[in-house]
Image (cartoon, rainbow, N blue to C red; front, side, top):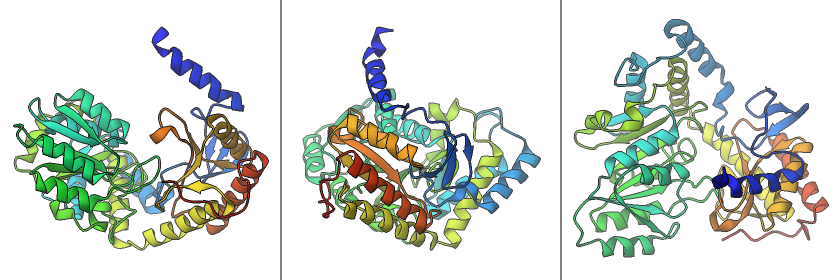
Length: 403
């Protein structure tokens, strides 16, 4: 079809690096941090397995027991036959974890944003979203009927101006931001955003997909890190990052919260999560709550990769986090670098314009608490060798963090 012409041409150009960066096949998963790819043992530095729970023995055992007692799936939605005891128990666990009254669990993190945002904002309301929002947030805006307004990325002053212009407009105003942004790894200035939204009597929803289990004393995310949990109206998140599985959630103190269960189409018309997944997530959440020190190992590993890449001469994001984005100016060179890394046993994500913020080509690396220091030092060494071979590194001097 002609409508896919631009995508076909872009995809074909990317594949000239010698492989398809968006179609890599994991022949065998060896552990939380390694896989066999193209016959080579490869360090996985492009997953979001932040706490390494995908191969945690307790999570696997819980999933096995649920599989044996409750079967492979629910074969129905949450409003039909798809609510089991453990689905409700996980919702209670998450509500308690965040100190909120209510929780809904969705089948994916994407659906959590799609369902929550499109349902909360009606035709007479306004959604005010960060310009660099995740695709799930943009798609939620398309699915819903509210008026959508974008503000400059991570800019409280611009948000203030946008909300001020709506002062005389009837309807709810719902601000949507993310804790950690998935491409560049930067944090929202959440304390400032909360202050602005409260000034204008607006609501605020925070997507903690990449910050749950990463930030805050107990792993609640940026809402805890910035001490604004009580002031945030809605929190969404996913189980496919720190929880090591799949699924999503919405927590809130909203009055009449349960009406969302019969108003939210992505919740109503999707089969619910398999019991084995629910069981593994309940276990990983319990382990995080019992041992928040897991995050200390993650941040030690973040330091190793972030400062290692920076000291090698690469330009990295200005904020440290489990997403370490290496900035490159040339998409073709970025694709060649991605391929060279894979051939040398390191898997990262390639992110290219127009999908990237500000049209920057990125080698998007992600760090896990399960990585060993030796693995990450090897990643840094291979990155540096590839950078020199491709002429990406002009000197070993420290690079300035990207703005």
